[in-house]
Image (cartoon, rainbow, N blue to C red):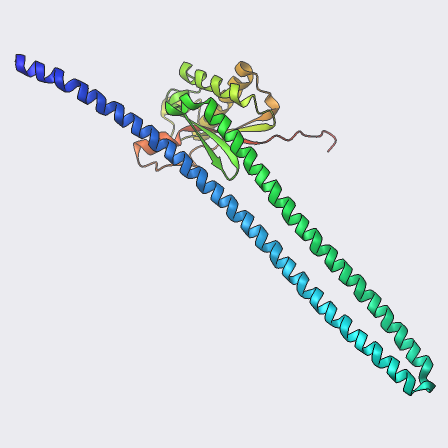
Length: 301
């Protein structure tokens, strides 16, 4: 019996070391997943820029073709004009008629020159528009990336503890918090540990007054139990109530402006994982905070 006790004491540090390594590994996996999604998002944006550039280049090619056609017509008109001059010398009796023809050709040449000038101006404007759009897109991407880096840096500890994740969805930043951090089962009151996380998050979000916050509640597909149906007839009411609780907390305890926030419930209809698995249902029960450009409403509009 004494030998068995000694063996257990020797094995205990090995077991604890394995647990720590596993947690560290999982954190690195999560961080790698975040970086992979960011690279995918940036690749998508780059592809959109390339498509826009190709479209503008196609338009430029068409305009160049029209310019070549106009120059060819210009050359033909000049040849016709020379022929008219020669014909005038041979047929002095038709001088008046030839003069009218020459005048008409001069007018056509003037019109063609104006068309050429307009085409050249259009080509230049398209080139400028292409460059401006490229610069604007790069600026937007840089701004989103900077905001993302600030959020990740400020909430690094919360991310490491698995209390929230931050992702970039087509240029829009999204903060996701699992319900197990915020709420007890079937409840809408925010738990103390959830309040701490929301306080840290709210302090960071207050630094971005130009962003609106679309706060969405999501559930799994498990229906409301009978004891809760009188208060929450379905997952619609529960998801909306939880989103509203988060809005109230950020407004009342953090001081975020109410005009910046929107509360919405999506019930079970936007899952991010398989509801057939326990782990998947846990991921689907979440609060998502989407950061979008803040737009003030003009009452006169």
